[in-house]
Amino acid sequence: MLANVKTMIVTAIGMDPSITDDMKMLALKILSGSGNDVRCGSGEPLVVSRSEAARMIGVGPKRIDDFTRRGDLKRVFLPGCSRATGILRSSIENVVMAGAR
Image (cartoon, rainbow, N blue to C red; front, side, top):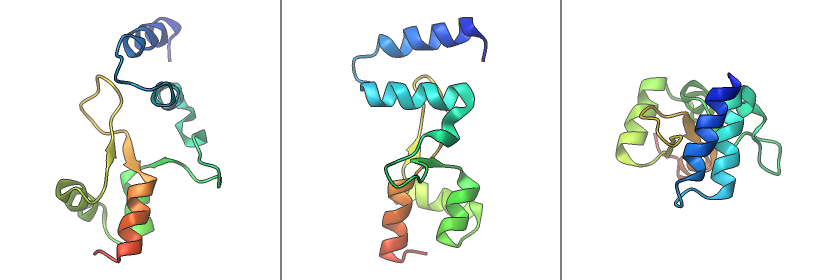
């Protein structure tokens, strides 16, 4: 990412009082390409791709879209982006625990 683009994003994110510091750090790590390094205490990623979510649940990627439309899975959006960055791992774990298919 170009330095001036990163500066613009940091400034824009900093202006939104609804975004927590943790969310800001996560967004910047993902945008800088180190999103795969954003991990929880167990070493697992906090946000995973649609295809990885499908693999974890044991369904196809299109089924993941059904889960997100129903609200079973939580998509992660970065501020100002209309496309999801990935799926929140905790929502995947909830679906797996519930045995939803």
